Image 1 (tube, rainbow, N blue to C red):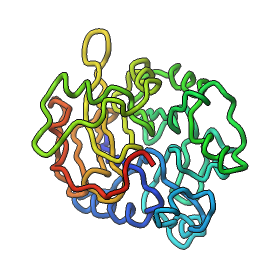
Image 2: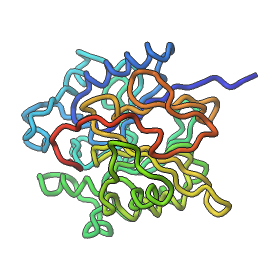
Image 3: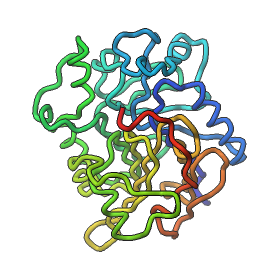
Image 4: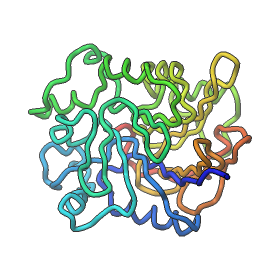
Amino acid sequence: MAPESLLVAGVGDIHGRFRRVDSWLDALAAARGRPVDMVLAVGDVEAFRRADDHRRKAAKRAMPAEFAEYADGIREMSRPLYFIGGNNEDFEALHDAPEGFQLAPNVHYLGRAGLKELHGLRVGYLSGIHAPRFYEQPLKRPRSLDTAKQAGYFRAPEVEKVAALKDMDLLLVHEWPRGLPQRAQEREVPPPGRTLPSYWIGNPMTRRLVETVHPKWVLCGHSHRAFAVSLGGNAARPLTRVACLDQAARPEESVFWMEFQGREVVCAGWGISGQVSWRAGQPWGLGVLPAPVEPEPLGTGY
């Protein structure tokens, strides 16, 4: 008997746009002719209760703070959404649950670092970004803007916790692993309209983590652009496919879906059209990306 299929959608930095993301997933489900079983968000969801919360860095950009409607039960996400922390979150609300908890119906914080089995998939996760100055320092309770900022940095014990894990189907990180543009340049020429990002993008700790645990897939955000590259794929290092997601301004590059049979991805695509851009057995790299769209003028890594 063939294993039941599973449709999983990855979403880039939501930055408070919960209503928009939920409507996109409705469109994806309609296009694929089946429900989206779960959603994995790669950080900077900004699940703040108030738009005028002084801790919201994003408030300076007049971005929405829609989570209050979900926390108060006025709205409900249409399917389970699991998220990791980025470097812009309500860290005061998340601090006392480092192993994760449910913030609202169908909205789940996975935690700072670890692994959970979701719908039969082994999903590892590491919240935050790398800040060398704080890497070895203990995590403080986020009582001020400064300590809240520090809460968005992962620490050495958290990286070590994930590094000890095995047999991982997906790894969620916020910041890119270092060296992805170099890896892409070694293997292929960027398609028309696409340029490689800076060689300095990402951090070495996440790259080392990927090369230690060898997840089948990595989803990441933070730098607000789509990217696709594979790592490993030889006798010494099993193949890892990396998908970097844009922020949730437009769906074309911020939504990446995967259809699983058992624990293996059989096809995948970008956006909400339902069109397949990759099938099992095909190469994974820049060629699977959709045609580029003009980004919002917001910079990267907020």
